[in-house]
View 1 (cartoon, rainbow, N blue to C red):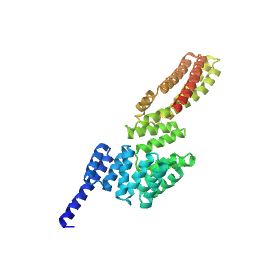
View 2: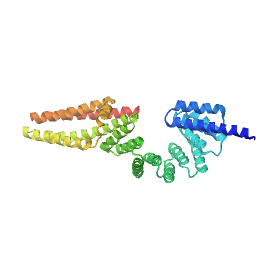
View 3: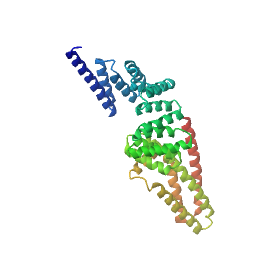
View 4: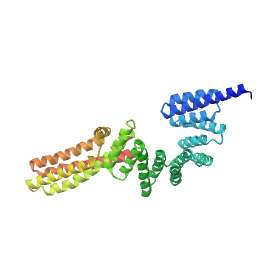
Amino acid sequence: MSEEAGGREHAHLDEVGEAARRAEHLRAVGRLDDAERVARAGLTADPDDPRLLGALSAVLLNAQRHEEGLAAADAAVAALPDGERGHRLRALHLSMLGRHEEAVQAGYRCVTLLPEEPAAATGYARTLQRAGRLGDALRVAQRVVELAPDAADSHLLLADIASDMPDPRSRAVARRAYEQTLRLDPENAAARHDLAVLDAVGHRPARALRGLIEAGRMDPAEPTTIRTVAAVLWQLSWRLRIWLLVATIGQIAAAQTVTGSRIAAAVVLAASAGLGLLTLRDLPRQALPVVRGAIRTDRALTATYLALAYCVLVYVLILVSGFGFMAVTVWVVLIGLGWLALIIRIFRRRR
């Protein structure tokens, strides 16, 4: 090859490499349409370049266009059979298309090509997770942490897979991994949100609510936060209902005298205020708008909290009037709320 031809070839490779890097950058900042345009423009000049094919496949993965992305990944593998990235992208697209056996085979090919590469092991762990092979996925995720112990994403992967497992010991592993993720990356909204979900599953609604508010602050555009806040508020409403149910039994028992009614009502109100303060004391300042928004998005939840507010108002009226038998109306409301919650749960599960 002449020196002039070699120079042209070198310049062409530089242009292709620059197009691939630009497409990757645009994908990373979320400009998927621009990234796709740059990658496809580069491929018109060199349709078999594995870097551009990989960049295009990655863009299509983010865009959830998995049939097209798989075709680009297949082309990347054909152009560079020993290139780990093409196999990894192929595995991820196959996994999202539900072709799990092929995805796992492609993911395994990645780790055999580059056994010390965290990205290869990460892709393999994800394909195993989606294939339902959680035990294998957990072992690979632990290997990812060994390969990249200072990367927050490594610990987040381990936490995500461990939290999917039914074994309570795996939940402890997930909690430690989420906490390590947040130590390495304190502004990781996904880790904060998922740790809060773990708290909700563990019936710690107050802690879960605090975590969800923090996650919402980190990533205000995340729509799942409001839905999860609503789920946690349902948990808290159950606790409030149980407490008021027990309190109402005591209030009716004390309703024989005006003094007894007032004392019982004062105790119930003071205890309710104390429980509320224990739940709300550590919430950040921006909690109230998020909680209010979550309640407004769920009409049944709105009705539940309005009814609970009515129950508290009844106790205020008992304290003022001394007429303890008004607590019977609280009993009726709580029974109605129990039926409402049961109907809502059945309806939403069927839907």
